[in-house]
Image (tube, rainbow, N blue to C red; front, side, top):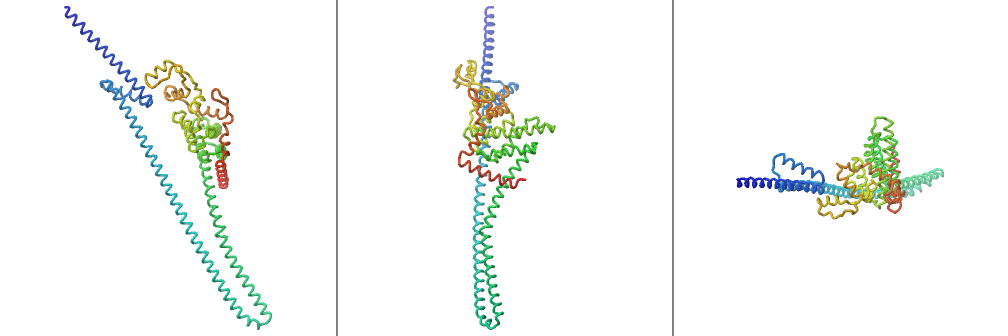
Length: 468
């Protein structure tokens, strides 16, 4: 009896030990899965972590046995898929860069060939001009020799003419004088016409053709911009106001007029997509929305240019990145980390300042936050009470946009406009009324800027000659 009881007790203890071991194994699996998912989310984003968890769920549904090795192998596969995707993207970028490089090389070769053709043509024209001049000089010498022969023949006949009456002698003398005058006048007129043609008319024609082409290109850009704005639904009055103001802004700043018109059109399109009046079928609402979109596009283009000039950025490529970023976040109405970094580089404004303009404020790490971060990030060394900056808080909101709603593009644009207009300031500071107009003040600060402004002013004046 005692032997049977001991066997039953041992079996129960063994079953309990097995149950405890299974529970510990399941706990370790859940912890490992949670750690792997958090590591993937931190390194690659929430989407990769969700895909990893979905794969494990599929394995459970298929009846596959989950071990720590299988769990870690599944995580490794997820990492390899991300690495393969990034490698593919990198190869695509490299191919695009090589294609652009080849295009630039082909363009340079074409320009060199065109320059060579132009030089050859000019040389041939010069040779033809020289040959023509020589031919005319030979003809003039031949005519001079003929005139000399005729003069000698006339001298030999004077003896005969002297025997004629006084009237005949006078008539012959007058005829001789008239002939010489006509000959001299014809020769002079021929030389004058040749000189005017080769030295005055031809160079003026070439210069006029170049200036005409320059003005026509500016007129084409202006006309294309007007057509694009009209096609998107903007009233002609508002489109002209947008183009004229951006043209004036480009002439008074270091930036090109063409860039201002291009990005003014694109930003107007993004602004119009979120304006209910602009997209209304009611003519009065649509007219009101058209004016609002035109004004908003003008202000945003000038704001980016002034903020860039305030930060010392005048490179057109850098400023174009700012216009591209503001257009993207306006179009999607969602601010991404990439757009934020592009905007920061373009206007030389730290992310911390952008976050504070949006209302984020510095806080302190709590002990709970520190413990949670250290579980998934062994390299996290902040302590409870350390500063948790506003920029980090904004980045966290952007990263968890699915749960937090993210940062709206309209909110960022609205706060930047208030900052540009001097209606809003950073915490601890005062509104700065000098931001607006910074690019215009910088536009005449250097000799290169003045020359650039003069060139574009001439081009726009030529454009006005062809603009209907």
